[in-house]
Image 1 (spheres, helix red, strand yellow):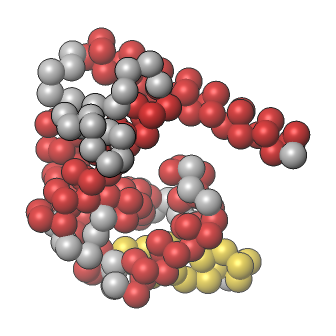
Image 2 (cartoon, one colour):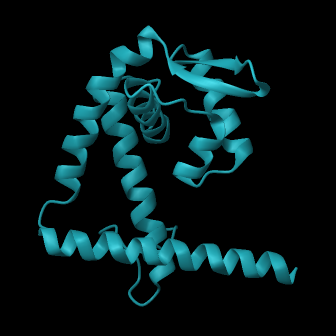
Length: 166
């Protein structure tokens, strides 16, 4: 094992599901960040790319999208989403425009630069996910997705009960 208690082959210790998920999450994030930086833009990370893709879909469908939508869709805290969106705006990928009916709300839209990256990004993520899922059949993928939804729901319930008990 190396200094991070991760076996050399990248797998977590057996029997500790939380550790396995943590290691898998970090490995996927690092690989996705590298793929997006190499194939789309070094200014984009996996998180920024997924948010950019979400905003692109909403913009294409003429569906308004706001910061709270990003918070809910990706289960990210408000402060983290604020920092992420500010950085994406500063780097020229998005605009945040106050809404007339409620100046606290800011509508999110892609800039020309954001649109230029959106198609490349979609292809990059599609290829990445195909490679990531290599060796898994449709039934295994469906089972995995069902299990992940359950684990997220359980984790949210545990966090909520911990906050209530505090």
